[in-house]
Length: 531
Image (cartoon, rainbow, N blue to C red):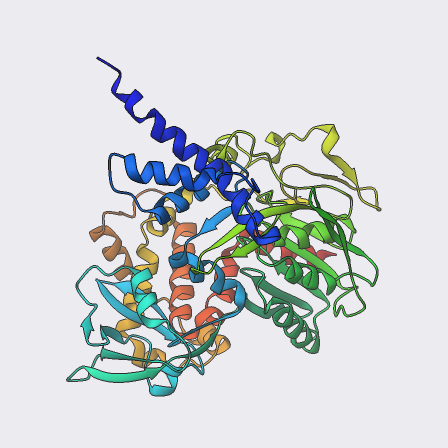
């Protein structure tokens, strides 16, 4: 009896063959109007016809095509990817700086779509939709109690500008469902979470990505901070996964003198392109600290690398992600797209910070776990760079390539045994959930807080409220046991206040409170104060 796996070998070979030649056809058709084998029989179509005719199950051409592209790109590098038509807008909207929809932040709560906060000036806010409203129906169809996914809600609420969507809303205190017909509009999205004065003379900007609007957002923020007396700046790029190359160059330009090298790119089929700072920078001389961590990637690392390599400022935190590859996007008529790595980028000293992916995609994606297990999150000594990846800045400082940006001031991940109760509550989402429920029950009284200063001074986590939280945590299986709980209690109270602040004031009510218990942020502030 034959090995049953041998029956499928021709099919497996066919699928591999598809993956091996498909990209050549796609790019060849785009560049010269023909396939990779001019004048010869089209092997790709022949293989697909063979698979469709002979495969054990029914399989469509489009399915074969998408699987082949995805599998083939995975073998090139970790950042060349195929984006299906269904996923295209989800992948691109955050980088465009806007999308078209109804303008609400929402979350699924108890199997119900709850409005967290309407976007200021958006179509929902203009109609009177409020934070805490439950969306029960969309276009007459029930969306409550049916286990609907967040992605599906987004698809129902998003749509072209000028189109309409009908929603039925449950609101506390209202006897019946409230019906709204919302005309969709362009909804702005922001790459800057917040910009504010931490202390006299010290400003803070936090970016979550590098989009089409980032340069203007940062420029405007710097103008406002300078008007408020900023002399020193903390630029927070932690967990910033990157975005547009040009946005990163424009942000770095704000801090570097005219003519200073920011970055250059080069690839086998792309000539070397050099990007230098212009005379447009608003903060070219003040003291600058940049915060990074293992989630800081790509465009964020371009900014951090340009600042570090030019001796313009200091980098604080932990080693960054290590993505030094540049992608170009190919759009298809069916709404899907392909992002292909076309070049590497190099920091001003000539280093490429892309970490190795020679061991495959799974190993590459498990790098965070490896860093944690090796002790790097607590001790930088475990990081070893070969001498061939050492570079010198103009000021004589040693920097490294081949594995992210190494900070000038290392901040270990906080691991404190006295924070066990806090960590368990955070990991189970109890602090977030309690704050959400508290805000929902007390929304009317909380509306008296119109800005962060008023909220910070006037809202306190009382002993009664904290005792209620402890009872809530115990019901959820987390008991407040052990000794030295003062720090854990302080952290939980701060996080409760921060989340409640976010629920009523968005990020302006969140980060100024959260940052008070952030070791990296506090180290940055103390460093600037002592310099």
